[in-house]
Length: 294
Image (cartoon, rainbow, N blue to C red):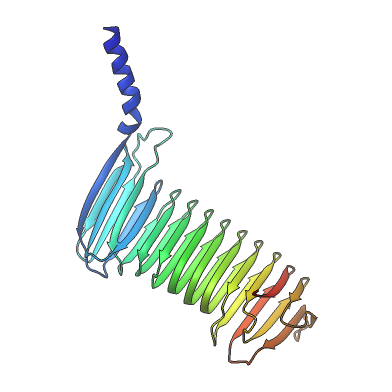
C-alpha cells in the first residue's frame, strides 16, 4: 500500500509542471494580403511567413490562460488572456503563428519577446519589456519596445524603430529609416539607406557601411559618441554641428569654426564629387568620429 502511495505522489510530482500547461493548435484560410492581429501579454510570439493562403497557430499556454482565434478570409484575430487563477509563478507560454508572407501583421506583448522571420509584408510590433527581432525583407516595419532591444536584419522599404532603454541593431538596407532611443545604443551595419535619421540621448551611435548616391542621413546625439565608418571613396557633403563636443575626422580637417547662427561650432566639408549626398551630425557635447574603412 505504501509503495502504491509513493508511486502516486511521484507521478503527481513528475506530471505537475506538464499539467500546468496545455498545447493549442488551430488554423484557417487567409488571403495573401490579409490582416493578422496577435495579442499575448505575458508570453513570447514567433511569426513565420510562408507561401500558403492560410494562418496556422501552435503553442503552449498556461492551464489558466484563455485562447481566442476568430475572423475570416480577410483578417483574423489571435488572443491570449491570463486567467484569474493563474499559478504563481506562471509557466512560460508561447505562440508560433505562420502567416502568408505578404500579409499585414500586428503584434503586441507586455513581457514577451517577439520574433519575425521569412516575412515580406507590413509589420507593427509592440512590447513593453520584451525584445523584438526581425529577419527577412518586410516592406514596412514599426517596432517599439520600452525596455527591450530591437534587432532588424534585412532589406526593407520603410522602418520606424524606437526604444527607451533598449539597444537597436540594424543590419541591411532600405529607402527610409527612423531609429531612436533614449539611453540605448544604436549600431547600424548598412548596405545603404537612402534616407535615415538615427537619434539617441545618452547612448552611442555607430554607423558602418555604404552611403548610396543622393542619400540624406542625419545623426543626432546629446552626450554620447557618434562614429561613422565609411568607405574611403565615399562621395558626400558632411555637416557637423556641436556645442561642447569634439571631432575626429580621417577624411580631412577636424577644425571646428563658429557656426553661422553663432550657436556652437560646426565643420562642413565635401569628400569626392558632390552628387547630392548629404550627411549631417548634430552632437550637443559628445565626440563625433569619422573613420575610413580599412
